[in-house]
Length: 125
Image (tube, rainbow, N blue to C red; front, side, top):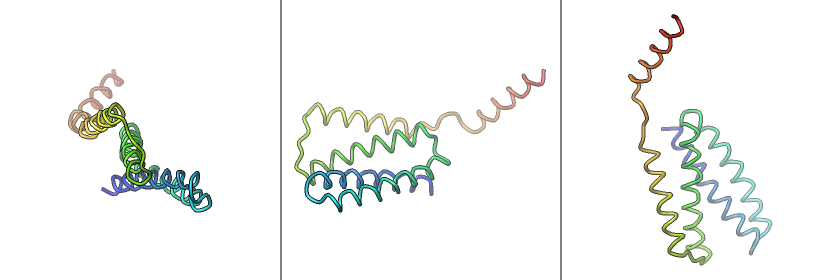
């Protein structure tokens, strides 16, 4: 559970850092860049903790995909940005793909062990 929490924190920190980037280019450069630097650093740290147990491909897809969704939402809510129907559909398809990737657990542990035993037997011959 710890690793999933770290992944969630990495996503949240990435979103906050990107919001800071927007502030840095619009209303508050010093605060925006400071927020961006701190949060992107923490995001990479938390992500590095998450990939200890969560496969890299899965964790990266979630990190970037969920981050993009939340950043798009933040743009609409905080900055009044508009998304076209095609853009919203694209984000929805990406989120559907993330759900599919996250819930696919791959081969069961017993199948993995049998595969290892089979490979060991072949190497012994």
